[in-house]
Image (cartoon, rainbow, N blue to C red; front, side, top):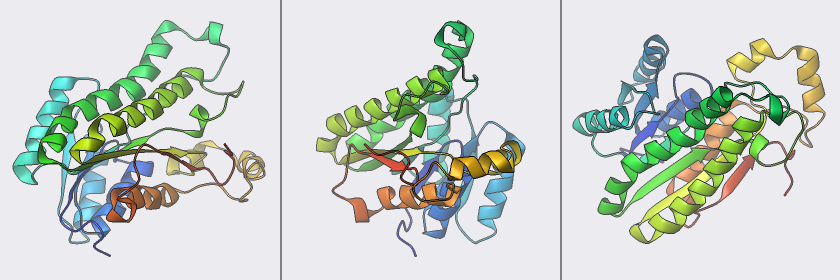
Length: 252
């Protein structure tokens, strides 16, 4: 315990699912956690659950496709907790459905790219300068198994945006490494969040389990434990990598 004692950690998109699991685990490990989202009720629910454990936690609301809102979020965090030392750029999602490229609308493409790649870029841009000036920092981004292997059933816009996040992360690692900043990326496969538990029928879940060498589907805690390792000093000489949290289903 206390692996992240007193470190300020912002986890974007932490009002539910993977982000909430990461924020909760980081708080349990001693971090001063910032819970972020756009749904005020959901954000406050996670914040109050973490606060009940005795951890120091605050919540922020911001649209990560708007740089001015990210700057406002950063300034508020610094007033309450101090500068962000660990940034988990987890926020994202797939607003468009899978389908042939020619059937993807421009609107759906832009929505996926903005929600994932643009939001991650703007968030890193806002916090990276301070990390470099202080000579320390840790950036963790979130990709997907969809970006790791071509598949005709993939949500293509989402997959392309996540692949962009992987390269963005490596470029951040290369540029910011000399300033004491590390950057790594996590690429989960099917993770059984509450939403997926409700939306994926049990028969489909069973079929998906059979596609993984490790015969189960992932949990938010699987991803959170990986994030904890990358956020901690246990990975102090690791930067610029993509970690597949995929039960062996992505073999590169």
